[in-house]
Image (tube, rainbow, N blue to C red; front, side):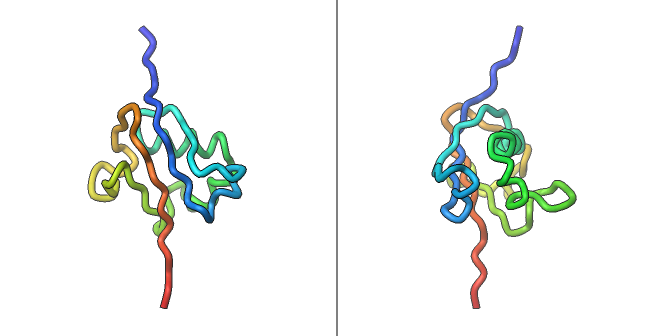
Length: 96
C-alpha cells in the first residue's frame, strides 16, 4: 500500500522571498522537517545556500519552528509533521 506524504505549509521570511518568487508561504509534502526543507529547496533551489552550509547541514543562524516549537529543542530535522502543520524559517538577526 503506498504511503501518502503529509501536506504542510512552510513560512518564508521576507529576506528569502526573492528565492520563492515573492511567496510568503509554500506548501510541500513531507513527513519530517528535514523532508519539508528538502522539498522546499527542490522547488526553489536558490534557497539552499541560505539554509544549508557546505557540509549540507542547516546553517547555525537559521532557526526552524513547527508551530511555536523550536526544532532544536526536540528532534531537530527529524521532527515529525502532521497535515496542516506550519514550518517557519526564522533567520537570526545580528545587531550591536
